Image 1 (tube, rainbow, N blue to C red):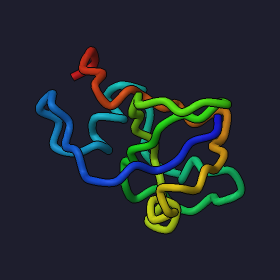
Image 2 (image 1 turned 135 degrees about the vertical axis):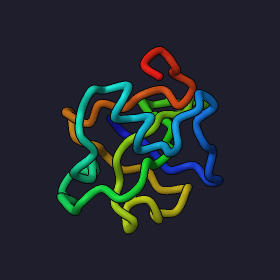
Image 3 (image 1 turned 180 degrees about the vertical axis):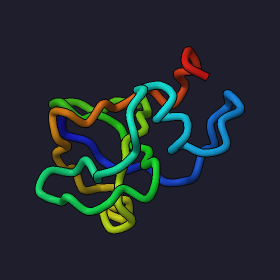
Image 4 (image 1 turned 135 degrees about the horizontal axis):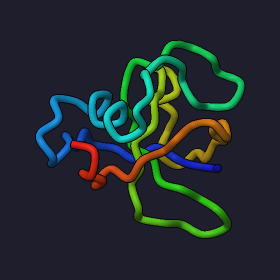
Length: 95
């Protein structure tokens, strides 16, 4: 999946304390590794990204990112690993 970062912190609207907690509940996984291909650093933030597959989308997802990858300029697209488990930032089913 090709994504780009979007700016501005948006806390989960479901009551989770952080995007990390929100992602872990939704995926039933542990927040460990940055999902950007060829990175491998420890994930430190729940990064907000939008998907890009030949056209822009305004649908926001949360994925585990390191601080460096979360700081990639918003006009640069990058690939995330196939195992990334992006979740919709508005998904409250698990919360």
